Length: 166
Image 1 (cartoon, rainbow, N blue to C red):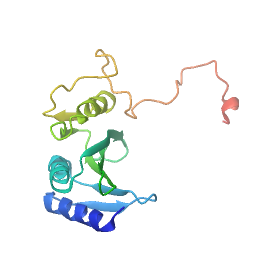
Image 2: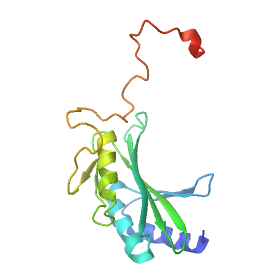
Image 3: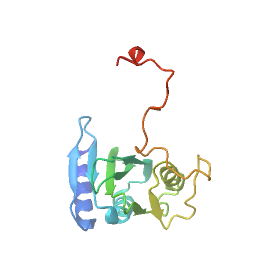
Image 4: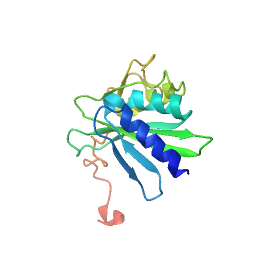
């Protein structure tokens, strides 16, 4: 990975963001950049048009129910193929306002990834052309990847906890 190109990418993000940018390298030397949710579209559009980040590797969500005010996170993995630089861009959302602008107008492949993230986490992508469930049944009234449910059925009487190290 070119450190010079990475620095250029971070500098561009800082000029595009309206608010605080948090940058760090994880233990695998992967750049993680947390930006305000209102700036995500402009940041990804700028990286795409100005620096050639033309490949969206992944787009997903995460639920951290104990992070008050930042319960949800949308994670974008984008890649500049010629420079071989990957960025992980994250945006935090609250449970009361879990909406973020779609990037399907920048990357057409984001359409399905955003639908999957909506389906499993309930994160709403504004201006999305068809934000409907993609894998789960339309009749489901919940989002299964949210950490709002007990891991085990506490009403079960037929299990012996000694077999589970308890």
